Length: 332
Image (cartoon, rainbow, N blue to C red):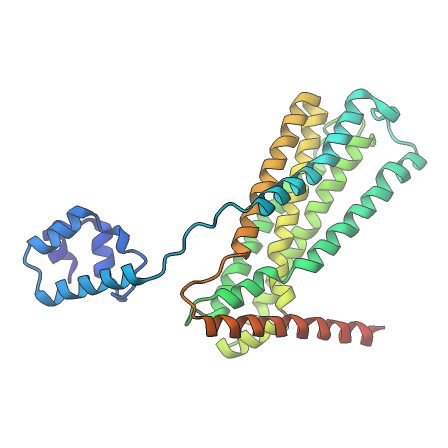
């Protein structure tokens, strides 16, 4: 099957690309064939062997179990809305306080006011963010180890993921740092809204910096390894490989409230409230996508392979925690 012969047969470019590929048993792109493609194939003198190969591909494709879209999950949808509201609530409260001038919010805060309204809640928020990241950072890397298709290189998959996360985090950093250094959205930068604006930006900057640095370090160490050593390396540091993805998500989750506070300060309560509601939609969409993907299983893997990988992933998580505990005890 050559490009020339298939072009003369009147096939579309997508169908030609499939038939001339090296892997003629690859089935994912069979849907590229339209009705006209099949008519041209069987009406323009293709050999019997070619026709038999095409029919075999169709039979295999039809026998393959299809991954249907997941049904709506009420728990996922409701939970993602609650989390979205939780992320939007602080900016709404701060914007309302600023708009209506409660607690002298439009002036620079005194020292004791800064301690009460900025330092204590800000420290509690940062601690909560660290706890959430630490508790869930291995999720992405564990999913890759469990759901990867047979024959797929863990080394290449992790290298690609780390590179993408580092690029995204670096792009976010350019915007976040620029916003931190430009003028405040309000005339008095030490007012309540101005201080929380910087807190959200800094809370977005830190995880993005972490994602860039961790990705670079992990790429440095995994690059010279072969596949067997790479699997062992990823298993040993499964938490670290998953952290950049979660860090980028939290960077975005802090960047958006900062943008909302900018809207409150620059354009007033009405625009700020609309921005905050948009934040709910964004957080809900990101979290909902993550929950559905985390709940997905690769139907191409047989039950025995899936059970083995899940057991291995569980052992890796336990081994990683034990290793971290030993490391901490030695430092102590």
